[in-house]
Image 1: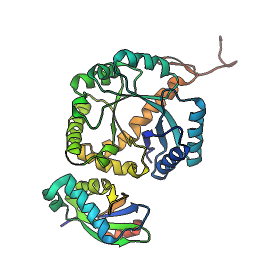
Image 2: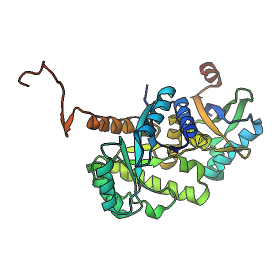
Image 3: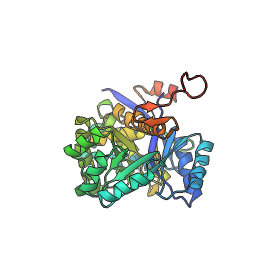
Image 4: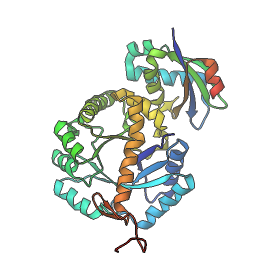
Length: 100
Length: 246
């Protein structure tokens, strides 16, 4: 199974919990692509640093476009206005960490 | 490295803080030039103020106005009055009469349609043919894709998908812009390019719609408004004593 690792930066006034980020991205996927589309993304949160507001998400390489569109479409996290910027996409976690 | 242009930011002329904030955020997100939509009666002083903010943030200011005429006669009147003063003229079409006039008029740079009413989106094949002949571009604001939800976003995406195919078929340049005054709805150009996947625009095509396409409009109009412009295709290339026979 080929995967893609997506480094993101959360742009918000406060630092959110890991669960809030995860929920916001999944809500966005479900809104845009429904349950069938969401099942194809296989999206998981690999790492999240509350201090730097950076996170790493993993998805199926076939659903990269779905995942990227859903991440960018997030406009609210935990009922607060916030957005998520994609920093980098890479094929392996090691190369992603090296580049960011 | 690509040079990104966001041609559509709203600003309240009276609220300098908001204007500065949105310009600074655009610069931070990687834009090299921003188009601020000024009201038609904007003064040079207000433009200079915004230019000062842009210079401080390190971005190029593009002056722009959004026309929303009710009839085509109103559009022609506005174009006569504003074309030489403003760098980019966009027409938001609320009727078929206006949209057809805007598409065939060479003085119009961008045509756009209301995001929330699919019955008022007139970008069909005849419209695209006219726009292609007059070098007008089709503009899409990205912010509504972020703040609309449910059925309204579904309808907008369905319309946009059809319009992208029409624009591509008739070779009408597409320009993607933010179309917002809210910094929270601003995204990086690459992020918007990811979002454009939702209406069938490829990543590189979407990047072009944020870089080369708007940049060419700005450069074309700056050439036209420069003192060296004489007529379409005729420019002063040299002045002074080294021109024999002058």
